[in-house]
Image (tube, rainbow, N blue to C red; front, top):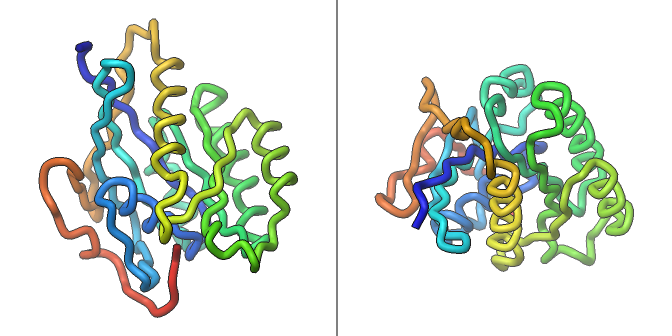
Length: 211
């Protein structure tokens, strides 16, 4: 088996689209019906194997509140991949994804691998974002589009696996190792496959599902 490939993935999107729920479902297979409001940022680690290669992921979950946007570059710089999350029942959250894509391309260029995630597919009856429109937009910016549900655990593993494969392919032949997520003040690190650390220390629980 080859040595570890280390990649940093950042999740970006508005508040209440389900970023934290996606990360917790993927890394710890847990889901909380209450809305978890991330106050700043935290990151979790996930180790997977792709065709005999060990891949170590540092997955950064960032706050969606407007006041956090100015701090965004601190967390997404050095990222190898990004998941841009929107809520399929909230058209504005999809429009904001376009702003994040522009920001990432401006800061990190074309090298970063992108996935666009339409979350809460379990609420299809309340959909406000046209599926074909979202998929065409993703294709236009070189991203892969996925529909997910943290509540039902749908397509989350497939999304991260696809993104990891693309990062691995992009990194093949590179002499420099990918950047790792670094611990910062106000950031909680959780190693998903080693220890059950409490993730919610810097999160507020609010009523209302965020799936």
